Length: 168
Image 1 (cartoon, rainbow, N blue to C red):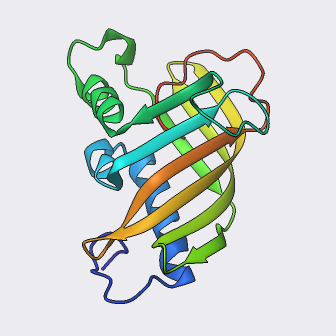
Image 2 (image 1 turned 180 degrees about the vertical axis):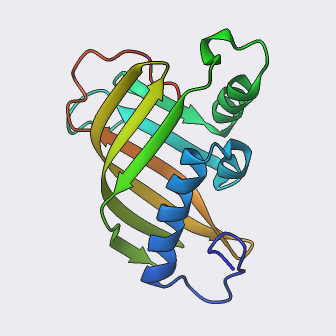
């Protein structure tokens, strides 16, 4: 059983947190977007800051700050037949360093990991490479790990980017 299917009966181990992060990246790479969306809490967010060291997604512009509803709309768009910007579909590949567990607060039901990564997104003959750090703030809901916040800090976040179609 993977960390997504096995019910947790005690606080997650560091290895379960690491396995979760690796499995989450694989879901994106395999375009299992609906399954990926189910990893988010109802109040979960996906955040890509626009500024180095940004501390608030609401007071400063972000590359992306989406709640579960906006993520669902993006997932629906990606699988839609009338999404001409996705013909052919974009593909991606995550190269992760081993995630590090930075915080364990069992009383607050919060766990945080930090993962350096390279991310490649491709469509037709165009390929974009990004270096980034992903910070996952996780919790346990109904015996399963869930994402409260996934923050992706692109190393050169203040550069001009083309369209990022998928999820880092």
